[in-house]
Image 1 (cartoon, rainbow, N blue to C red):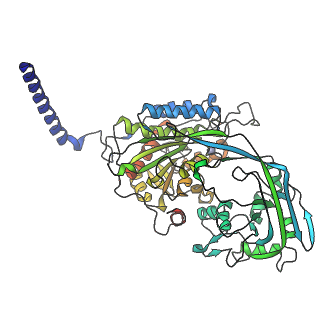
Image 2 (cartoon, helix red, strand yellow):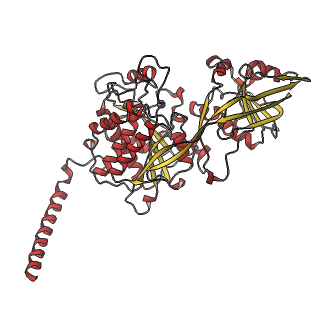
Image 3 (cartoon, rainbow, N blue to C red):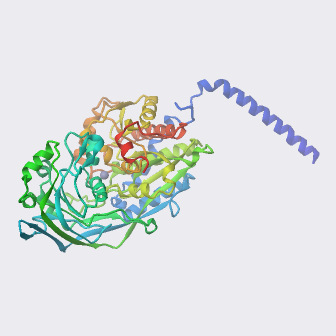
Length: 562
Ligand SMILES: [Zn+2]
C-alpha cells in the first residue's frame, strides 16, 4: 500500500512539474501561438469547415425532402435532422417537447356563399358583388365576423404623431367602418413606411379607437402595380396562420370584418360628401389631413372554412453560457428551416423547390456556428439559443410564434442574429448588416466584421425594406434588437461583381426549383459567413451590457418595453 502510494505521489509530482513547465512555456509563447482567433478564443477561420456546411446543405436541399414546406413530411424530416445534430453536439433541448416547439397551424378559406357587403347611401341600398366590387379573405383567428356602421374616410389611416402624421386626429371612430387608402406616404423612410403601411399596424390603433369594420382601397400607385380586379383570382385562397395557444387567455383584438373595395365602390361611398373621392385621395397623397365622416353606411359579413389543424415545429437548442449571472440571458441565432415545397404548375419537369440557398444555407451556417463552439469547447458568457424556425415562407409565422411565446423568459432574449438566404455563390469581401445601425449591435457588428478584414456596406436596396421582411423582424416587434447579415455587393475575392451575382440569383433563381444544389455554391464562402456570424454572436454574448436600441430609434421607440 505504502509503496504504491509513494509511487503514485511521485508520479503526481512529476506530472505536476511537467504541467507547470508546459504552462510556463505556453505563457511565453502565447503571443506567437497560431491557434488564437481575433477575439482571443481558440476559434479561428479554420474552425469553420466548408465540407460540413456542404454535407448539411446536401441533406436539407435533397429532393427527398420535397421542398420542406411547413407541415409537410419533408419539413418534419428536416426538423429531425437538425434536432439530431443539436443532440449530437450536446446542446440542451429548449423546445417544449425536447428540441421541438410544435406550432399549431390552420388554413382559412373564405366561404364565398356567406360573403356579403351592402352599401346604403343617398337613400339607396346596393348589394355588392364579391370579386368585382369587393374582396374578402378567410381568417384563422376570426373565422366568422360581421360589421355595420357609418363609413369614415381616414386617408392612409396612420397614427404616427412622432412623424408629424395623424390621420385619426379628432375623429370619432367608435362603432364606425374605417375607409382607408393602402400604403403609407412616399416621404416616409422605407422601413418606417413598411411598418406604418401595413394593415396590421393600422388596425392595432384603429381597434383601440373602437372601429367595427375596415375597408381599404388601393392608392393610385398600388392600383397601377396590383390592380384591384386581380384580387378576384385569390378568392379561393387558403390563408395560413398559427392558432392562438389555449393557455394564453386573452386573444388579440380583432376587427369584426374587413374588405378591399374597387375604386367604383369608393366613389359610391363618397356620394353626397363635401369632397369627392379623387380630391380626398389627392390630398392624402400630398400628405394633407383629409379624414372626414361620410354620408354612407356599410354592412358586411363573412364566414371561413377552416382546415384541420396541422403541427410544424420550431427546433430549439441552447449552448449554456459560462457566466453565472449572464448565462440566464440569451442571444438568439435563428434561421428558417422551411421552404415553399412543390410547385405543381412549374415549367419543366423539376417541380421541387429545394431551397438550397433559401434557406438550407442559413440553417447549415447556423449549425456550423454551433459546432465551432462545441468543438473548441468554448463557452461565451451569455447563453446562445439556436432556433431553426418554421413557416417563414408563410409570413414569418414560426419566428412570430416563438418570439411571442418563447421557451425562455421573453425579457431574457437580449438580441437576435438572423440567417436567411445567404447568397453563397461568390467569395464575398463585404457584408450588409440590416438593422445593425438601429442599436448598439451596430458597433459590435462593425468591430466583428473588421476583425477578419471584411467590409461593412450600406443597404444596397433600401427601397426593398428588407429589415421588415425576414424572421428577425418578429423579434424586433417584441422589442429585441436584431441584426441580419447578407453577403455584400462589392468586388469578390476573384474580382467578380458580387452585386451582379446576387441580383441574378434574386431575379432568376429565387423561389424556383433552380435554387438547388447544382448551383455553383461556394462552400468556402459559407464557412466565412459562419465565422463572421459567430464573431458577432460571441461579441454580443460576451459584452458586459446587454444590447440597447439607439436613443430615438423608430423601432426601439415603437416596440421596446412591450
Ligand atoms: Zn424564401
